Length: 286
Image (tube, rainbow, N blue to C red; front, side, top):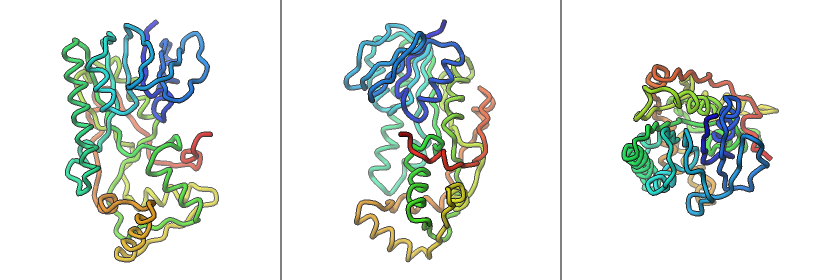
C-alpha cells in the first residue's frame, strides 16, 4: 500500500484530493490547522501548521501540498522527510500579478515565484521529482475568495454591480478537477520537474461568468451594469468601508487571463469540466 502526506487536507482542494487518494487505495497522513476529524485504518489526521509541525512519517511515497506554497517551500527546504514524489499547488497569479500596480499583489507573485523555485531546488537536491500546479480561478467548495464572495453579495442584495466593458476572459476551474489533476500526475513521468497551468474547461467573458453565477442562485440575482465612472465612485466608497475591490482588481476585469491547458492534457490527461455553476457550489460549508 502506498502512503501519502497531504498538507491542507481539510481545505477546498485538499478534501477532494484526500477522497481521491482513499478511493485509489492509498494510506494517507492528513495535516490540518483546524481540529481534525476522526481517522480510520487508512487515514491518520494530524493537527498543526508549518510553523508548529507535529511528528510526521519519516518516509512517504508522495508528498502533496494544497496549502500556501511559500510556507511549504520553506518547510520542505529543511525537512528530513523522504518522498520520491512531490506535488505542490501554487497559482497562475505568479504570472498575472507580477506586474500589478498594487504592491501587495506584486508581493504575492514574488512569493509564488520564490516558492516554486524553492520546491524545485529542494526536490532536485534530494533526487525527488517535483511538479507544480497553477490553478486559475478556483470554485466549487464555497471557500474561494472570488466567485463565492460574488454569490454571497448577490444573494444578499438580489443584484450585483459590474462596470460596463467587463469583458476580460476567464477560465474558472472546479476544485474536483484540480484534485484529479494532482492524482493523475503522481505517476506521470512527463510531469516530473514541470509546472502546469490548470485552467477550467471553458473560456468566457468576466461578465458572462458573473451572470452565470447570479443565474444559479435561488432565487436568481440580477446583474447591474454601471457606467465606468459611476462604478468607480461606488467602488471607491466601498473601499473606504473596507469592502470594495482594489483598482488592480477592477482593471483586470477588462483583461484576458487565459492559460493553455494543452501541456497538462498531453502529459497527464487533464480534462476539466465547462463552467456550469450551481448554487451549492458557492455555499460555505458549515
